[in-house]
Length: 343
Image (cartoon, rainbow, N blue to C red):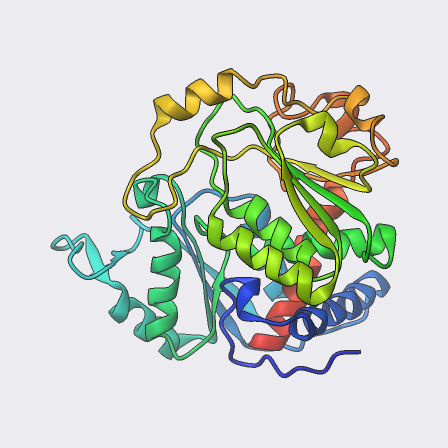
């Protein structure tokens, strides 16, 4: 059992941690989940406060963090830009409507024990990396830990829940075939954070990873390089294919999820018209019963919300292979493990 001390550390991406660190978080998550199931008190964060800043809407993220802090004996504050002076980077301030991140981060750090932030998409002008930059700017100025609740590059808390769910269902993940596949959606406003963190997470546990997507929907090259390095370090493999059927063949886990056409140079915003053209040309990238029959009795995973009838059929998402509810529930337990350690 791992024993890494994580107190006081920011949680922005798994790439800032090694496998032992992640195992420590997951060990703690499993322990706290068992206590929760048995009804045993586990108020390890008595009187601790987490400030949650949401630039984007949320169901699972907000409620799992709020419920988690309550169950651990602490409290979570919900903060929404517009209801407070919107935190802004230097040079982007507007008089009497924004406040520099340096000031917001330092003030909140004096009042509580952690800051959690969710920002991607429209609040960043769909400029890749800006959300991550804002999260890191908070971390630069805060003397308490900063948690990334999803930015435009990473969703590390979702990856914790994903791996936790796979461990519960499959046991040892080494050598299991994990497929992260693009799927069609009627909306192009889909960040890269979930697929990127999903393949990063799988790469820490020796899985054989296949990334599948139509041409033109590439992920961040830096993330792909990191996954390749992890595959060499921790075992497993990594490849990219452009055919959904090929990817699904003999898979143990499939994770079909839409993401947009996103330039990753940090300078060029997402082009909705270009993205729409690629999306509409690939409506056949949908998970059906026939697709699932190509797999090795695979688990069907999705971070939710899923675009039913576009990304996946009801028959699959509500079927026996689907673990979407357990996956969502594990957001609570995985984050409790994280919170208990870093706060």
